[in-house]
Length: 350
Image (cartoon, rainbow, N blue to C red; front, side, top):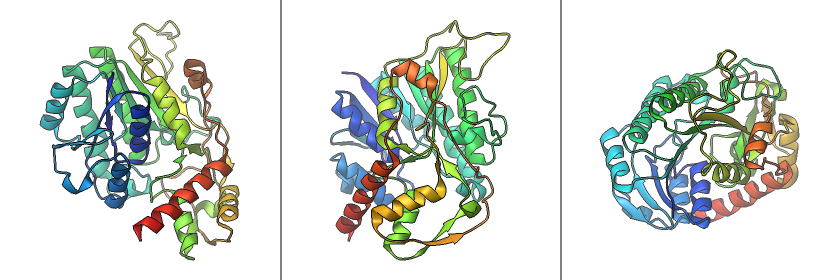
């Protein structure tokens, strides 16, 4: 039985991945600091779904359910090293991060502390206690000013628009340097607008659904002239599951040192987009949600927010070639699944 460390295990993607890996026969150790960037009760509810007794969670203590859970912060290097020394992980999937583009305009230091220092600590542990594969979350936001649509992994990512994107770009570069210096096989994943049951309350689908359920106003930025490559959570998790046992190898013959491409290297390193390869206009997205809920939302149109982009669109050819899978869930099906979760969660919460 292969042992996997999932960081951010109480988060949206981390929770779903942990659940999937357990079903596939992996031994999962999950860590999370359960911070209050958004409602910690949602994070605890996810852990309860993994049969973790959340009433006894204390720092650095192991809790047993479907996974082994430890409340631990990546910034705590000593405790992180102790965890690596104890468990001797085969694989590491890093999904822990300070999320949110708009929040980075308010609290930029949080992105350096969590996304850069925290990731450096994780890399140091992977160096000290060698693993078979490090899979880490990047973001479609790294494409920044680029309008070379659809986004390909070899597009320029030199013009990020917010500290969140800059920190994710930094993660890619840090992972490459450690792959080159210390032979840590590393795969970075640029996620495109992930949504679905147990999703984050700061993201559009949750915000819009919550406002419509409460008959409140909600904001539509850039006057609705935006599009997103919405990617359903099950497709994200299936992609990660297939990638985990397929680490990159040193000396990729496709890498031309005289004409280097960002997604590959002579080091054991690679980058993939994970998106639905099917962008949807924001107002069409709202229309789908209104149909599922059976009511019209109270929309308030606002100008573009600093740090945001007008559209995202993932080229996923490289991903499909590598794992014989690409996301394909229809938005209508994914939105309905989220709304069903939301209604049930609110009912049980109240």
